[in-house]
Image (cartoon, rainbow, N blue to C red; front, side, top):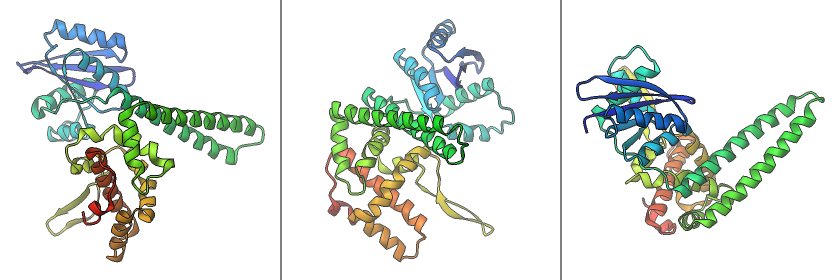
Length: 322
């Protein structure tokens, strides 16, 4: 494959840069709509770019529809972590940043790094993820309204209270819909059963953990890769004798997934025999509480990964010495 298409995604538009064999570019901006996707396809056909390797950043909802469109068109599509693009830009010592230049940068990254093809989520998992994200959004809105209510003047309190009630009703309806959705799909239903058997993952967080992990678990061949994706891998910064920063987790992965693991981890530190013994051993060794909790979170990820990948119920004897 000798042509590469870099795409810089924004909310309303996206910039495309087609890098050809002669190191020349064809660049154009399109609306981020189904009509814009079709315009891109016609433009690529005009410039012999339908066999290009496409690369775009993982920008959440803004790029999903375009990635699916290009994949359905038979193109090779890679969706990469923006941190990789940023590091690649730093290696080129770039000082100017525009959407057009970013698209060209992504095309060069695609040629140099040959990123792996994107594997889209199964439809059932995509729907579960969408429902989950909507619930999280409504909960955030509800918390914001509760904060406003605490300091609101009497004249606006009834409106805020009514809005909170509406949001709470919608959240309950969506949570019920999530349960029905899981029950209607055998694979999700089986994964829920496996997660339910892990002490620390209770009814309040079960659907939450399932929604998070069902969307990522199949993408990784080993648990270390998953831990790194979640940003839970320890990092060190040391150079010579003068630079020696304390170790910390990378936090390079999605913060929402780490947030979703926090309460299950605290619960597991009390109720899961494997996590509890591990946590207590770290505390007895003098590790600070937050360090021990993060380590326990990594341990819980190992357990979740092993259970979901193998399809075997949680057995504390298998993990006690791991």
